Image 1 (cartoon, one colour):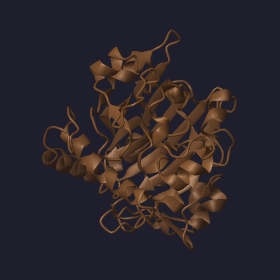
Image 2: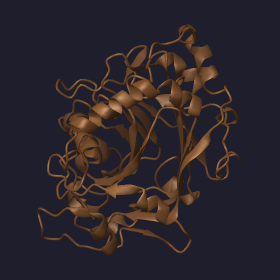
Image 3: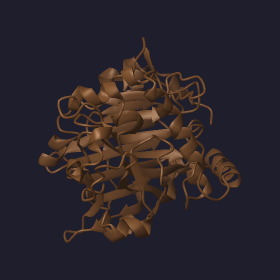
Image 4: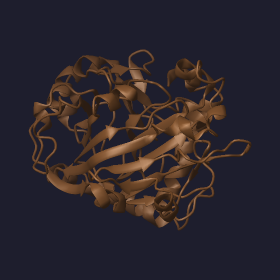
Length: 394
């Protein structure tokens, strides 16, 4: 939809407006315990064609049988990488793990809140919670949690197909995170896998302590929130003990009381109603591959542990910390914002569903058309990382 006159305001004023307008949010998805696991399909694949990790993504039946997905006695959702099987002596060994994609799409006008006690970490480990359109990158990707190895800070980012989506460095004063992919006055969010240009998207790195890794786990975890509405896309991170009082229940939360955002991508420089389509909520853990396994990135935090990423994979004890411990994931919607963008979103969703077809792409099995289309695209930026073009900015 066309940008309205408010989007011509100075960026600093827009940033304030983006997080100070009170809205009423209605709970759409309340996922905890067994309900969380039933809300996702398992993207089964014997080979990680997308990100080239040393993994096998299991089916639901196989993951349950291997005790990689379950609800513990406290009602927490546990999603693990296999930490019991030895791959010693097997040069083709891939470690079993899980790749989940939501059955229900998330639309513009949504506020996603994710509460976890533990996020996978360790040398060779690559966890991610993100959303992705049904056609990638044309319908975009929103990365909420992502980093690798023994890094300590979470990364927020966008990946889009549109050439008009950027994050201006002038928003830096309106967010607490650091823009880490800026070139001049902008951080470009556009994905162009065919040419190998800027395939990593526009990244903001969290500056609050303990947003990732062992520090996150030792403090008892925390909460991540992502707001996608007509004003733009906004991210927050709250460590345990500093979570706002209106987060944790099913009543309408009020982001206007949460303080300065961790990362903010204003609509004035990236129109959220046109470059993003309905989003699939995705959660997985990869091993090595095109992020954790890039030599320069691996040695940055794990060079004293091993000479390279792949030598760690056969030893199951390296994956004792490679698990998610999740309290809940909730999605709230703002009906007014959703209605404003419904025409374009419905058209995009219909186009994707009619072109997707059945079965998985690239060898993945048991996935619907929407899922399979997304996999082809996400591979594009990681291919470039492998040859070093994108690695320096990750």
